[in-house]
Image (tube, rainbow, N blue to C red; front, side):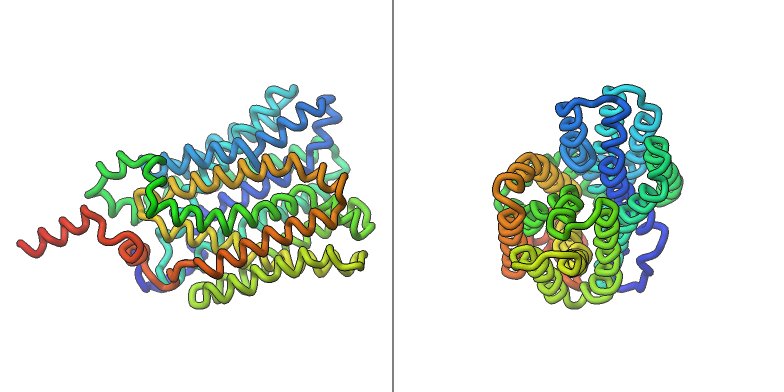
Length: 432
């Protein structure tokens, strides 16, 4: 069993191949944002068309729907089928963007990219946790978070370096994501299915009958509400940070657009450092302590905008605090908890449902953010987001399950009891 005590490096083919889902997720979002003004100019897009690109992109609705479909299929037909074939769908979406010459083709490309990313994330996060040793799960899951930060940093850097090429530069950025997706496809084709999903072969009929309605049972709904209290509420702040922060940097710090992009790149760099030097080394043994410290960083970070001080030093301190939070706080711990506290036959479906709820919520919330900033000011927005990250931290500290160092089977038994099929198997052995 992969969830035993064997010392397995997190930088193995299985984990890296799955973690690349995060690289292309972040890369798609940042590349789409970086090239938006170029596409607006090239295709003479209207405000309505721009809004559709944003709402249906990998950052919002299409990814949400993809997660819902991918999570269900990953539990029904297997993790490998979803996370392998999603790369081919992603490649199709990228090709539509590369060769798009009108708005319908461009929009179709964005939608297909989002669908594939959403499906891939749910299957990939699940397979990483299921293949990781029980005493080393945070290290393995952390690789995915490092990949997410790397995707954002590389795309931002490429966008700056290729900025002089205009739309061609943005297409080159997307083309590099196509290459990564095809390499990932080849890697994943050679890898086996998730051990935990294969071990459920004796209950395959149960797996086939699972549905999202099953997740409404009180025993599962309690876990979903906990995770949404931590992750969805935190994401209301993270969503603003991801899309609107360059604008806020310019307003609060009085910096140029180029410096704003450099600051945003610095934010993702500190995210990667937070994962590599805080979450991965310590979260397996000191999960709640790591979560509490990292979550408090977000509280400190958003509090800075309520101080009667402005300028670049405040922005630098902000990106350090928020970067560490992104790397070792809600995002990384959510990936672990969401993979740990649901039974194997519901694990990917639960993540798909929650990813759907988060991305839909971000999409809806983003509609109001510009109005709040324009009419009430950045201080009011910062206060709202401070409230969000504070509530998220409190919920995490108060209700986090004790799962560190335990196998997925042990966690499942503690939360839900021995599965009926397993109990019958044990009883049969006793009779024999």
